[in-house]
Image (cartoon, rainbow, N blue to C red; front, side, top):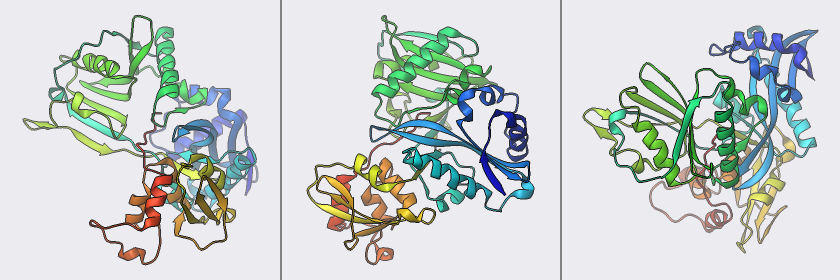
Length: 402
């Protein structure tokens, strides 16, 4: 089996493999995606003789983690013909992509997995949080604060005004948001403007500056909101006003990719009324793979604590990452000292992004020290070293807005 980089000459064959692998894949809707030149920088194929039997698409991706910008690789899609599955092909291609990414100074690979457990074994951890809301129109509260903003709405397909407003809002969110915003290649970020079923709504002030936006589709009295983001509360109230204006057209709503600290109190009057309820589902999916722990720990740690912790990292895929790192006193460095904790590389990802705090990881037995299986689940004092690590890597609200 030969693994090598491939270009757009293999587009039709890749589409065929994806069509055989994913029942939700629509070749017609993906034409723009596969035709964009930005897609083809990091596409890999597996060949049996000269027959392409598996395809792997990754691309450059900028992401904010703890408000620091990292260049990452994002794995967009992986597919193998049925007769070639369970032979380790995905693992082999991933290793090639990792090798090249590390040579270019990339420290993270991210993906939204088709098989979560499979990627955990390859060292990926669930790094960000996302919720999904489903609710009846009647649960929206009718009270509105004065926002003094203008709402502009319309289809996204071939509409320059909406494209400009949405792009402007995304840029502002990247620059100001405390969530985990990201910048994708054009093939992905511009794809929404080529979908005929999507609409946009943007709240702008009298200077033309964006304060909030939503991207949505609607069918059979249901509105599916793919993206809902606001820069300030005025933007939130303007978008709420837009939702309330659909009383006669929309019966139910579904809001996807919502942050865990979304102010539900400002959108709904209650979570239940007359048999109608607000349903909140954990829709977290973005997984993170740390490629080189030491430089990432150094960039993301709080350098102010004066005490240190020695962390032993276990990486079953990349043996060079099986190291001990002393963290604290303003620096991180490779150490031969006795470790205070042992952690899998997949769990290290959740620690570094802030999705799980050291305290939470310790209670879950993911920060292993001593008789970790007997950690009390109720109220108890954690070891002092856990508190030190908590000061170096405090838990934060995470949310990937893409």
